[in-house]
Length: 193
Length: 175
Image (cartoon, rainbow over all chains, first blue to last red; front, side, top):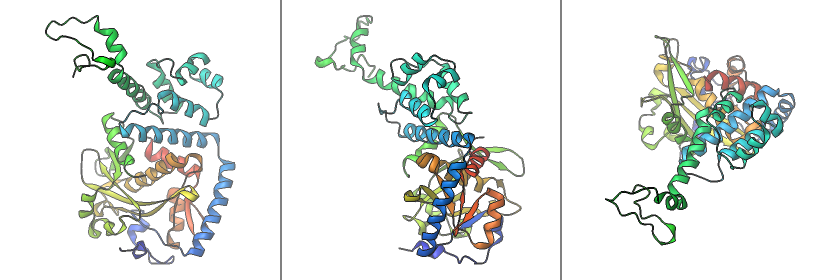
């Protein structure tokens, strides 16, 4: 295997115009001693940086973090009950270190409604993703929040057999005899297969 | 870090959420771009002649990402990243715009900026408030990176502090 060292240049190596223009970057490989020193300095600098971080920057990084996690989850296209709208909403509030009462006031709902949303006891109204988008300064688009809700709904619609049993009595199509398999599993007729 | 990230922008495409844009220098038009993990077939076209390195040689040693315009296959920029979990940072090892996007007569601007902002996005997704993006440049480039990307230099390497990451995310990622 060709080692990454083949790309290395010396610290004081010749610099090309493309590098000066910022169009090409070639990382230098540090020696083990330099790496150790670099790690120590980096840890010190980042610690100081964290202490001096403004609220705005902290909020941006939290928004980006939550946004990235929602991105990653949605990209899998597999429903995971643990990754619900309520879960990410709770993450959002907790990471921003906001009290629920304060956050509810910031997005114009009452605390009880917020708790119901977090615990999955009610579906978010259409305005909720929009308010969350605005609250995050557009960093977590409403579409992301909305997709979390639709993924849950889609899963429910696809898998809930009880609702099929309940709805059966309202449908009368003489062409298709509607039956439900033992154990509550649909025979495919009721769920449109 | 790989795999799922490659699908993120397919999701964004589906929901019409294009998060980054490059600038066509001649027309002044902005075009939405996608950053994805390089696929095996891409290595055939990632030649040293057009992309400054033999990127295939980096396979298995770094996560390699490509940038292209949405709905177009042509790769405009490539970046090699190394995750350093013990320091909660991502290191940019290599980055190159395609040959026609280098220099004064480049076709598109903001290619390198979008790639660096994407590295910030990945680091922040993974490490949240502790996230960092670093690189180890040649000595002669230190001042340049300080000015262009607001990077700090300490202990043989340059890094983006949180404020600089916020600046780059705002400038290139959230448009």
